[in-house]
Image (cartoon, rainbow, N blue to C red; front, top):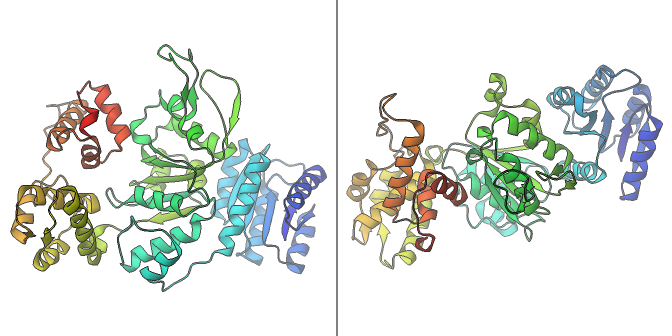
Length: 458
């Protein structure tokens, strides 16, 4: 049963009709007293609550009613309905325990998607004590290596939320595998046959944000010689993965919030509004809550993207998975470099488990591949790895930066890109991984700095 609470009979009637047409059982209440009576008599599975109750527009009555509902039964999910200008109020409601919020005038599709998502999450409760074998029976986690209890909990959460349309925020240090988790969410969802579009927000300037994300028409600006399809349109019916969300500039945060909130956008240079049906997965290695406190990240955007938060543990917090990861890398390297006898000694595996590896999985993979390339031995020992550890980009205590004022940040970036390209013999995918970039982000930088490259070498 879904309970609609709104003093406006037109809103109640409209929502009742919409929900019943979609097969939901629904009822309505016009006053707080009627609402509490209905809740006490028949516990609803979901409540739609208008914050601007009665003729007052402060939202105080709606917030007070939300507090009464949560005091009576904190497990009942509540979706808030508010005007765009009252999103700050809706965020306060989320802090009080509301599951989601939608703005007026709402899109029926967006509202129904929110309803289905919240109800689906209620049905999918966490299951403790699952083994990797059990999880692999039900889900496709082939690309994620790990059996540590913390990782099993991550996999359980992925499996539980993947089938919903809930927005997911993936947090964790650089190199912990956030992109792989995003792909696993998509691969285990009902959208898996649809596009999975990856966007590195850290590589998009504010001036290019609209063109990159929403597309543009020919003539929209000076260099717009052709129409361009935006990332959201490419991801329609599928999943869009927004990496490095914490690097998004303030002006771009507002534009992103709009499309996530309304599921509508306008192509740059066109006045026609387009709608999009997309699952949003974000990732960051930054503390967004601290950024909100500092005023550098919008609080309303944070609450829009983190209906579910998945935190990936650092590799040093799950050392038992290091041998599994190294052996996985070795299996791939045997095939790539035609070294069928290649292996790692038990002593070396134990030694690797003792390392802090601040660069996490990315650093471990880089270290393993470089050690294999430098040494022709079939069995890699501690000495082989230790000699390469000092060259590791993320080796603790090895990062020596030039003095302030001796080089610009742009010059430093150019130099690092040139070194990565030379080290990996112009192979874009490997150079991008070593730099912590996506291929598309590296391509943009190569073009920006006029660094020559050969696509055929990749």
